[in-house]
Length: 461
Ligand code: BG6
Image (cartoon, rainbow, N blue to C red):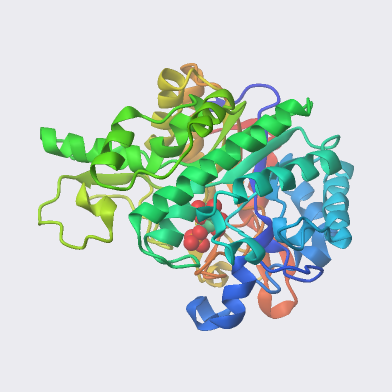
């Protein structure tokens, strides 16, 4: 079979500022430097992001290697706390200059830079004032975005406002994984709403400034599946999970309004956020130009089989997750692999979101202890990653053939990088990073294969 993609399909990879750069040259902290310097033991092997993959020092060699593995577009993020020092917006010129150098270097090597303005890295100077619980941050975020548009706008075509906004709310304010580790549905909903509002305000600035590029948002979608023999209550449980984890950002970002059923649920169960009438208008009038979709795993849900008691974990009131015999797992990371979901995402966007243009902004295979796959010549033999990418591309190809308007595929990740609580436990890159050897880089087998994939604009098998 042949799986070739349309001309100019964007073959690329993603990473983010806080996961790669290290804190050198930063004058202000984000929640990550703040937390991992104080509570290092919470992070895998006690490793925080202070050095990360040392992209701050080695960006040029990373970019040279990206070129060698066929990456044609690279999505990363600017760290708000690298370029601004406080709530009043004072500027760290060295930080501003750093991103100019990175962008210029990418362009020099013919790689299209795609810039996200926020990847989980709330600056401490805002966190001290409540972070995204504080309504004022929505204007400050728009000011920061405007600064970036003025500074880098003539070099960037693809901007995105937030990466995986639902993660900020759920991991920070429900599941207690990200700082400030709160567990409160109402606060989580308030954070989610303010992020949506901030995103719309940024889009408004972008349009008011008549910027020449396009602006989107990057959402992690977890397609929701109920058991084959589902009863009506299972279906209802699935719908609620979908509302809470997918449609909560998808609908307002693309359509400009929240699903009525979600608003009704929030009102009924007491987690409707505070808002002003004008917010609803701003959200309605400032929808995205395109969508980035991060896809890793589906969500398997059914009705609760036991009474819900733990009031704090509100979403679990509505459903429970389940596993089943024969569920395909990533043996090296513990997530379900279900490539068909990428086809379902493609068709869902085509049929329910006006066939808006979109791309896969992240999809990837995490592998624990990947060093065990390094051969005698020093190369990681990651055939499992090649198989993983192919399986997903087959499904994506089918979705595109049936009319879904997808313009690219970005692997997570260009190179091994630090991840939140898991630090360097799971490796995702096409390029390996040896932490014990001053971040020495080497190209994995998947990197060589990705070069062919992007050069041929697809593959045959
Ligand atoms: C994605 C995030 O959801 O998952 C990335 O956007 C993150 O920032 C990636 O690094 C992998 O996470 P983990 O926990 O498997 O290392």
